[in-house]
Length: 310
Image (spheres, rainbow, N blue to C red):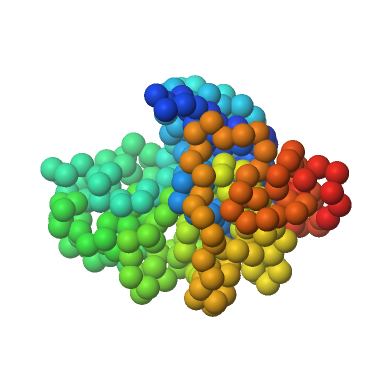
């Protein structure tokens, strides 16, 4: 039986800048299930990483957050991460929720070896796993422990980041574009490691723009455009029969879809209007151009104009 690890309800994030208010996420609903790999996809700048940062409590201090991010705990009361303070986060971050960053080497201290930093992480998190076991688990030689971050290749750094994330056997793993700088072989290996983490019981959120790999490695996909979720469902079902025109266009832009590019450019998220704006790039009758809401049918959902039947 599957259980929900994180439930996001009505997440709306606004970040003030000198250029205006960034609509970083708008009315996002998402559920991460234990034992599954969930993909969050969309073009660059659509708000994917903001959702991941919100789950990890890593949003800028200037951000305003509405909605609820519920961490479900079998051994204690649920926690609302959107309202959690620093004391709560000290018991959650790393222990319950782990983050795997893009360009992992830049997040390591440059003047300390990988092994020294991993050992410190294990001590801090009271890990049941020695650093040597974590390195072996992600396919790294023990000699990597003696290397400094600048001595790691991109693939080695990414696997090291996964080792750090697995130290406390977290309930939730957020992987933010972990394969963006890797060749196909290392991409496959990284995705297999995330799959193994899910098979061991974690709920994994894979933030990615590499759609070609998703049907094999993920269970569920959510598609995001201009700060809003526009479609969700089992990955195989969404790829076989997308409901939202943006999802269809994303898949058509792939080599397997005919390399048909989407016209225009994604909008900036600064001072977006209150409605879905995909019709500005391609006509989307019934889906964009007015107030929208999420329509659910079975294990799938799609954003449509209010008053227009699915």
